[in-house]
Image 1 (cartoon, rainbow, N blue to C red):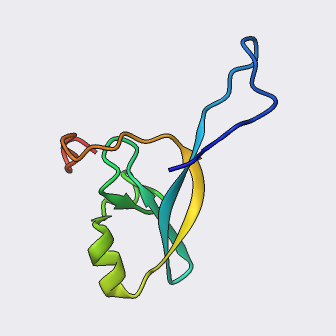
Image 2 (image 1 turned 60 degrees about the vertical axis):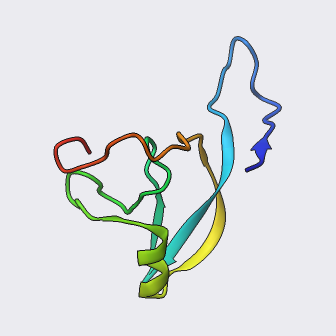
Image 3 (image 1 turned 90 degrees about the horizontal axis):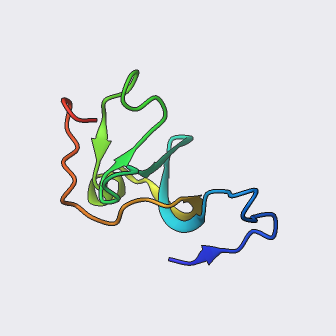
Length: 87
């Protein structure tokens, strides 16, 4: 993962760090890593309108295409439990 330096970030104007992550595009929808568990991918509306969660293997089997995108930093751990009760 590469961090991107933003020249507008200062002590008085802090911005979130952007990091390169693999995302998946499938049928016009982009699936991004969950912010607490980056091994789970979610789509728009998660978790209120869309409760679906996918692994990278599931998305690849569906024919999703990987690409790199700049996102806010996620936790890179699978120990954070993400479930219907803890989205």
